[in-house]
Length: 502
Image 1 (cartoon, rainbow, N blue to C red):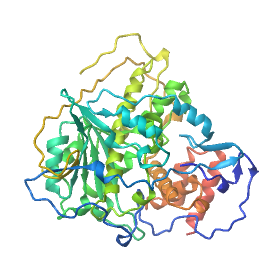
Image 2: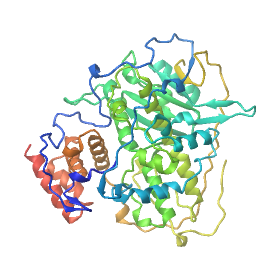
Image 3: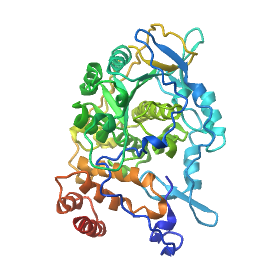
Image 4: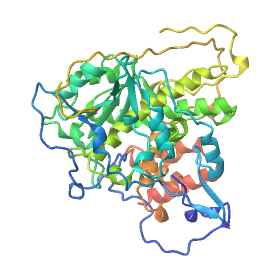
């Protein structure tokens, strides 16, 4: 999102600036907000049912629907506005939160003029991608979508990505076992209902929707609608706990923690896309000092690596995930999981082009620093490689689904001899509680009026305290102290004093 310049005390164009507009909205979230903030949601009374049929399908049947016909009414969507700070100059935030000129940013993005193709069987349609880039900004045709991807078979017939919408544990198990059990890389995301009030231990609210994606399919498992209090499909649990199956996403550590706390699933093989993105981007640019574990939003990564904006409409994000999904919710949730998978393959493809080739970032649960290489770190040597029933939203009118053979993409693994790198404290992994607090703070800022939004560092301190009942304000300050500058440390202490007085 673009920064709201007028809310900053220091403005690069005007110097110190004091607001003359009174705003009585509280700058901090209410203390009784739900303990884990991910996606804001409203109450049931504010949500329309949408165009999704409410009828359940009988067992033994599998239906396919054309998802494309669901998404033709999105012309109302708009992109975030960009704040003008001086005549003829516009700015926005880069991946590190620094202000950069829009013209420079657009020039960098324009360098990628071809569709982001990979070695997967399912690739983006270059014509659809080009049409989207030429479409009016903010129109429904201008956004990235999983519907752009397809497999062209030998006879010229195209297979589109199918979406399986499951509302019971039985169908979830069937889909996972039949379509996802042999995958080696899975896109992963969660949605849940966030409402004000005391912490809630109900898995239907805390893990309302589970999304996973393979190159050919997306699984939407609507836990909130499961008829019984038995939510964990055995095959899904096995996939998530199998370290040999890589699960990719942005801020994925927090999502997996939520799975563990609510469903008892101890996820392994978790890869944070922000780490891979920073490794690739700054290794290529020769700016190794900028490689760190600061989160980069899914929208920013999609724009830079896939060449199109990712739709993040507030009307969908703030919807009720406890009710049957509408067309917009299906598009939003399916795209979130699928874009993570595509980003992984694009980033891995770019990483393998780097000379020397750095190792892939370690899984999040291993809590290791991101390693990067220079020419002196690599020996000259050759690299080696090794080669249910559910409601299906697909590429045809409603019909029975027939069994089909699904090719499994080969994933090349490259190894490079690496001499051990010395420990570098500047790349130590931060406490997971700090990362979770930053994620919550960013989500809160995205749903609050700009005039009343406090600095990200203040919200991070607040959520560090609020999300961890065992931490006192002094404990919060101690955890944050190691990564703060002197000025930030003073601000952290002041914010902790404010919290301690609540």
